[in-house]
Image 1 (tube, helix red, strand yellow):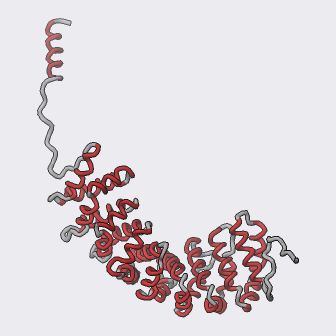
Image 2 (cartoon, one colour; image 1 turned 90 degrees about the horizontal axis):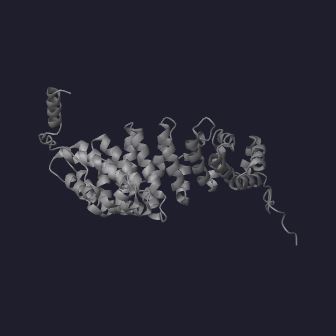
Image 3 (tube, one colour; image 1 turned 30 degrees about the vertical axis):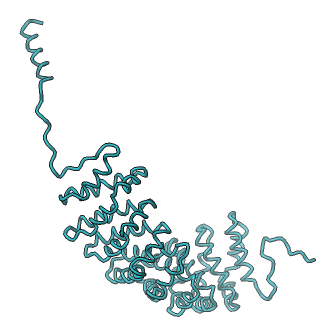
Length: 387
């Protein structure tokens, strides 16, 4: 290599390592993640800053942190909950409220977050957001409340929220959404109420819905065949939960729920909806009024026998429970036999490999064959000791 070439190579080497200008400054709306434990107070700081763009970006960034169990706890400890709840009340920006409600859904995914949400008044704010003029905010608020209501502590808090007025109001809102054609939100409202009824001590919740909200007649309307399937499915689930009360069973018969539930007892109906409807029918038919309402419904028992299919295990169990209840009416036994219930139940009993299915079939067989007391020995059970 001659001297000129060496000079050029040296110049290129110097240029490669010469001082460079400082990196271009980030825009003021940029949101960057802090390292380790710095990330959590930094997030809260950005959630409470004056720049609306930064706040919205921070709400989305919070979802990433809340998705990790370890980071979730540290977000709660750093004070993210009250900051997000405050943004849900932003009167000027629909998008901010929507993002905040969606982020609260991530927060409520763990019980520590749901409890913190209750502590900082988030349930009342979310309940108010159910009536937000922006549809996206209402959708996200329903999602957050359903997520939080998976925990029993939240269910009790919702029961007490607003002096006991929140759950009846949710029932009203579900009806309004259904009337407005918003089937998705109507379904979400009913799912939220059903989730609340699963509380360990649910007497107060059932009282609010059955006595205050008069939910049973409204649910009968929501079971109408012309309504979308998701709404009818959610209504059947909620009706089954409310029908654990004796007066609710009677109300359900009086307002005509039984024929509407029997319409769903058909192989042509989606299995999840049929399963919920037949479960509700089983609960209602414990009462004498429910048995005879099913008996006189046009073609009702034929549909119930048609869904005695062990391929759909839970639907089959629910149907056998309903058959057992209805067959306590003497007139119903002959009708069930005429529709072929006997051979179907016997086949299920003989081929069942799951004990709960076998036992439900045995109960239904014995009830359909009942003629006089004492009851015959349950099929499959050892004989009674004569001594």
